[in-house]
Image (tube, rainbow, N blue to C red):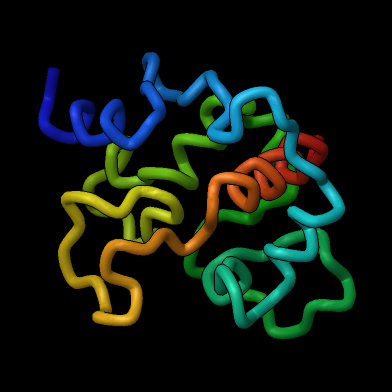
Amino acid sequence: MSTAALLLAAAGFVVVGDGIPARLTGTVPGDAARGRALVANRQVGLCLLCHQAPIAEARQQGNLAGDLAGAGRRWSEAQLRLRLVDPKRLDPATPMPAYHRTEGLSRVGARWAGRPVFEAQQVEDVVAWLVTLK
């Protein structure tokens, strides 16, 4: 098992293929409305700094990364979860930060050291919203 895989397993989730099939919250599902609000909130995850999303009220959306419209058609729930938790596992050159992984990272601001950007429930909420984007 690779070092990255060991770190993920130690953190409480396991990567299978190109996804994390089990919810980070155990059996507690995500809430799509809360997920949409997190993506739209420029103070929390900064998703719209790089991405466009079907959120009409959000102005000045980014174009550095893929459009989130259709994300639920392009990727499964498990694939979306891994893309949030540890996107560098899929693309080492991606500028997207790990939103939940805290170990084995570089260039992390002191304020964020050892803390995830999104807690487990927030990851599940964003995943719940993204899967609705067919």
